Image 1 (cartoon, helix red, strand yellow):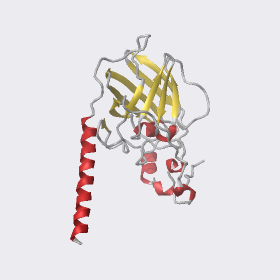
Image 2 (cartoon, one colour):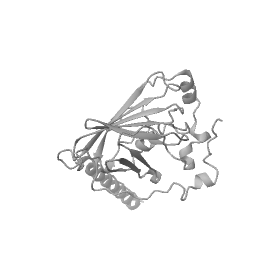
Image 3 (tube, helix red, strand yellow):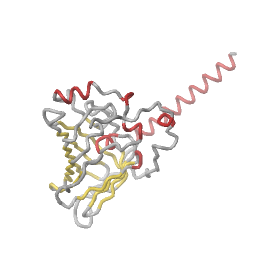
Image 4 (cartoon, helix red, strand yellow):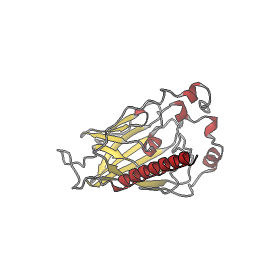
Length: 251
């Protein structure tokens, strides 16, 4: 019995040591240093694979990001927030599109691919992607979508991406903060050096919030990472067997 206990203790210590070493290795990671890269046309180049802070709750501060406490809900927004229960059907559990903010909030890597006309967001989470014109063109007319309609323009070395025309079927974050189809997102990207992106997102939704609010965070370049395939549907037994409920949307 003592031998078994000693073996279990040894395994525990070894496992704890391995976890500690892994954590230490993660803490020691330093992105490559250098000046801000630019495209041949002279624009700041955001291309690369990036580590994003995990932001399950946009109202809270966390590693690499600062939230907005006490979100300024309207009566409608507060009711939507207080009545939300993921057990009654969260769309991500049913493998429906995450939407822009919730995709940016996930801990999985993200890759930017950039030309003079477009910036493509490649999210490892569920292999979602969205392609944004960044040549200053106006918004398109069309049906509302999960990720909305995004267009970008430059303000000096800062890329500003403006997104409207959401279908209102997503949530802002994992914890379930709501928004409506009146959501207007403004994302601002700047690259102060080779290894980092300074990111700011402004949430403006007059149906859900009494005033705009923002979340800021830092993205870290990971040239040692490559994107992987991600399939939500594969082996999603909780959905097939009925433990995950498909959300019911209001008409």
